[in-house]
Image (cartoon, rainbow, N blue to C red; front, side):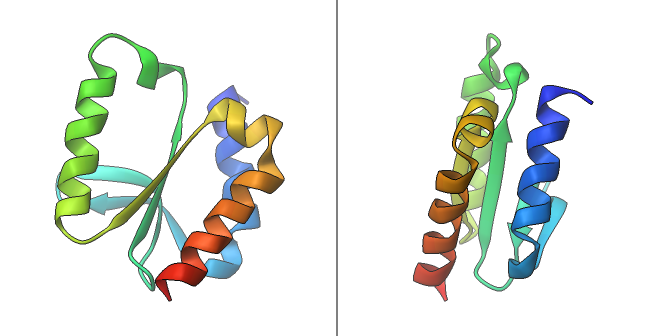
Length: 99
């Protein structure tokens, strides 16, 4: 299991009570997690997001997703693995704020 896969599974298992869907399509883009109830997308950035050109693509992608009324949270793999409890708290607070 790769680094990204592990963090993806941790988040998916621990936020399932919020009815997040994984690999959700928004236009031509796919977000890692999406909660339709509160219009919140979550991205977990693995190593590929830090390669040349990837950050510009991510900015454009996020701008499009936000332009259709979806809020966005972004975390790195390191944040998820080193501070999973803190990441989940941020997600919980954002969901409560948007309800």
